[in-house]
Length: 265
Image (cartoon, rainbow, N blue to C red; front, side, top):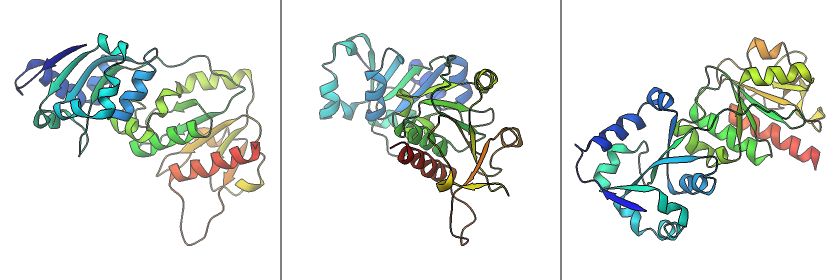
């Protein structure tokens, strides 16, 4: 392990990191993501076969944190250079209001290509809010679903807010393109389940969800797109009081996926 102490905001490496951490386009161009927090770092480091850590930025106060000191003893950490900052400088790098560190730049894994048609898929259709996107990923993984598709126009799966909301869900999830999913559906027909308030929508609790299928959760404002509505084999509504118009998409996904878990016993 190499400890490198940076004391000045004029340091070129520090300035480059600050610029990169604040730019989604810059991160995408470099094929990197930026994650913050001890829990996320532990998750990424525990799966370093998938997640190639490029840079580790550490606020000086974290060096005395008991959990962090315990991790320091891991032999694999010896190969990573640590860039240690005074807390006042780390606050310029961080993307969170109350930073604890560390901040980790890691290489984004390639999109998966071998989608398993015998396992469920969660498709986020234009979901733009990073908090909802991360929560959906976290919920899907908690419900045993690790195949995830995010359509164009949705929040970037590897954005810092998505990573924080997913709370380590990315470690288990595998991300596929819409094209890969459509190619799979051409070879094998699967139930395509949408949550939509259509005239033919069936109550969630009357649907048989035991067979593997594709869950489509639509955007916050527009709902499921016409493209996926036209392909749906099951339109599902969640019974609710007329006192409210609709449920948040992340809440809807949790209700649906855990009804599926219940049915499968």
